[in-house]
Image (tube, rainbow, N blue to C red):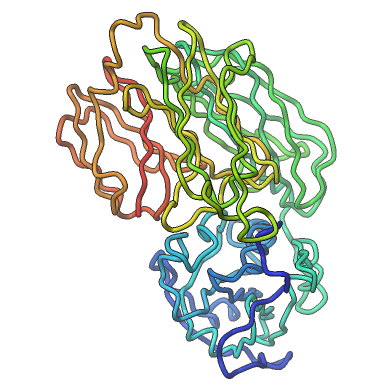
Amino acid sequence: MKRFLLSAFALVATGVFAQLPNGSIAPDFTATDINGNTHTLSTYLNSGKHVLLNISATWCGPCWNYHNSHSLADFYEAYGPDGSDEIMILYVEGDSTTPVDAIYGVGSDTWGDWTAGTPYPIIDSGTIANQYQIAYFPTLYRICSSGTTQVLQPLNSNGSINLTPTNLKNNINTGCGTLLGAANHAKLSVSNDIYSCGSSTSTSLSTSLKNYGNSNITSAVLVIKENGNVVATHNYSGNITQFSTATIALPSVTFNTTSDYEVEVQSVNGGTIYNADFGVASINVLSSETVNSTDLEVRVYTDNYPSEISWKIKNSSGTVVAEGGPYQPGTADQWGGGGPDANTTKIHNISVSADECYSIELLDAYNDGWIYNSSAAPVSGLEIFENGDSVVFVDGNFQFSTFIRNAAFKHGETASTGNIHMTQFSVFPNPSTGIFNISTTEPVNVNIVDVTGKTVYKADALDNNAIINLSSLQSGIYLMQVSGESINKTEKLIIK
């Protein structure tokens, strides 16, 4: 990845430049994580667990590099509380001068949202960093259940990943004692929602099955359920090694917007999946947004690398009807960062045809998405507007080459009616600290999901002047799906 310091480590600006000697007894501590849970090191060690203590800083490029490798996350899923429960991982934000909001990707002292993709606890504590006498970020301590410490090097000198999940397992097996692991331990995920320009759509669904278990996965049975009933079955055969992922294409199914769907792993290697919660993934089937005008406005919210990003809008036959980018590169770094087109809004006026269904594609030439935002422009993506009203927003928070929103919007049958559904509903203030007010001309049902598609809030029959309180959620972008008798839309919500 290109956004990081050339060195694999960032020096700590203190007068202490030597960690605890290997073999030292780990200093005990009790600390509260960002979710209010208390963690005491000696409690974990006394229960026989080994602990990995990752002391990092939100502004540290090498730390962000290691975070995005997901090595610690994968190791935690395999051997942490949701796996064989033999280890604990604690992330410590070790720079006491950095505000806690930086952990959530807010402000100028951070590379992004450190909570995203982090299943283990996050603790904001410069005190712990001082206790462990760190000389640079990231510093990763391996603490055996006996209490003895060893400093591990998560990155090589060239910035590449040294401590992969497999290497972490081998290191603990050698230095602390053999990890047993769990059999048939796998996790299922569904990457995208399904959108339909009508009341139903027939499509095949791709899922990912990741192996966290102590043996290869050679077979699995997956089913699609509609309202709790099995409507399709797929028998997988292959060879998924530990910490590897297989993409599995499921049979084509007619998905109805009025039904509830999920994918379930019924068996792994002929036996029951180890963690039942890991074997179920919901499928969101959503109606596409409707426009009534053929003249639309596209607003592209760029990140710090505008010369890498481009976009396309295609009709139902796959023909490109509008496209834009890449935009002007800057000179802030060797990858074209910064410049007049970075962290700004690019506006394009487009025309679409009547009675058509359209998909939106976001592309990144460097294959790492549109995720490098500034604090002044925290949102990247593409938004369609009709007569000044937002129709649909596609989030740029992805970390690969292409994100596709199929059936993102459709043109209605009667252009003369105007954009009625857009003027019937609004939410404000937006962005907010988590308190949102609703203005609506009819009762609406609301379903709010995070960027992974997980539902975080749901309410039915909300009336005008209703208040939605999301202040307990983390800062970031959420999508609010709104439906009523004549209202059907998706709103982007930003929690500061």
